[in-house]
Image: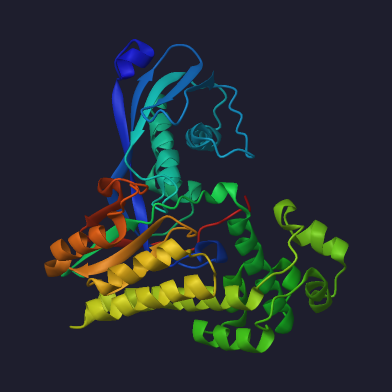
Length: 405
């Protein structure tokens, strides 16, 4: 296909895997650690550097149209989540990191088998892959020190139970978080909750952006932060006027200094529920890691219980599930999963289930029959919808930054 597109053959290939978040949902942008694991599904890019400045992108999937531009005039339209923008983000990140003004052109053909909008980080894999492509074309390397500076993340290996297998099941409900307000509203609700909690504890609330900052400034445990949340916030939704009264600011100050353009018209904010989810989910990540390190005999059962609690919190407190995900989680638990939960942003996408290895064949058969064997044929093919990934290790990744999209 590369030859038919560009009339030549690729010079090299670059691969980046997708990933599944085992536990730790919607807490990274609040300052807390998450626990992802790489999956076998990946993004693969065939590349041919050219002597012109032309950047030509093609995709093996006909749903994603070809794109071309000048490598020295990269413009990213943030208002449209087009597939090629993710490639441009990776390229531009490397360009800005090295302070380069002139980039060589290239022909790139993108392929991949990560289900899109499924919570398995297909877009992140494409960004990473594009960054690696750019590095290779330029003949550059990122040392470990520079990589940490470029993307300030720390990673710790977590040894997962050898007697269990993680199974990914796609609900076949697509949710593109870059094209919806749900995600941005949740980020803002967490920010507002952090400010109200800081104000309640007489901290300098106007400088606080993340829930973790409140805990750090108070120097207390996550369990104690849950108690503070109970005292400081009420379960009933807040309207903008009440938030202003709590903070002692005007509506205009709230709109112009705190709310993002895409949340300025929101009428209610569920601050109590969002804070409760974040602090309890952050505690579950630490408990999950501790159990993996201590490896008790009932390790799989204990980890499964944490995954089940995580889904309940995502469903009831963060409200990022959907009926299909809840149904799929129930089916997975019914047929032998010790733990099952939504993964990724939610509102569609995938579940991740921890299944004892000896139950895997019957589990896959039963889940396929119960959820995917529909007479109308409306669901995606099983090959991309239901698959097992054996745990070798996972990474505990502390706080990553997030900007409102």
